[in-house]
Length: 265
Image (cartoon, rainbow, N blue to C red; front, side, top):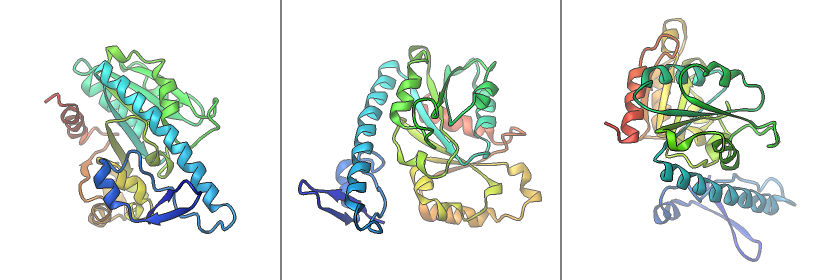
C-alpha cells in the first residue's frame, strides 16, 4: 500500500514512496503510511490531512526527545508487542541481568493501572508510568508527547539505557516515532505463525524480534520455520532472538543485543 501525499490545493495522491525513503533517510521517520482512506468518498481527503498533521506534530516532539537522549548520553529502545506476549517479564529478567553494569530506566506505558510498573519495582531501575487514560484519551499506544511527559519523571542524566515498554498492541505503537534509537518486538509463540502477514507494519518497523515462550513449544501446534519465513518476507533484516522470559533461556542473547546496540561492547 502506497503513501498519501497532500498538496497545497488540498488534493491527495498515492504513490509507492520507495524513492522518497531513499532520498530522505530512514523511512520510519517523517514519512508515514496513513492508510487507504478512499473508502470514505466525502471525508477521505480530510482524514488524510488530519492524520498527517497529527503525525507531523508527533515527529517534531520525537526529534526533541531524541535530542534530550543525546544530551544525556542515553540509548533508548521502544519495546512493543501484543498484550500478554511477555514484555514485562522480559524486562524484569533484563533488569536483573544488567544490574550493576548498565544504568537503566523504564518508561512504562499502559492504558490504565500500574500493574506492570509495580512488577518492576525493586529491580534497581528508575520507572516512570504513563497511563494513556490520564489526559491522553486512553490511546492504545504511546506517542512522542506521552513519552515526553514521562521523561520529566526520569533522571536521564543518571541513565545509560531507557527501555520504553509500549502499550500492548500490534498496530498503533509501530506507527508513532517516540524518539527511540531502536525498536524491539516481543512475539509469543502462542500467537500463531501468520502474525507478520496480518500485522506487517509492526513487524516491518522493528530491528529485532524476540520470539518468546519457547518453553511452551513442545505443547503447541506451531510451525516456527513458517513464522520465520513470514517474518523475513516482511522484514528480511530483522534480528531474531529466541527466549523464554519465564525460564530465562535466551535472555543473555537479548542482553548482548542491547549491549551491542548501545555500542558498549
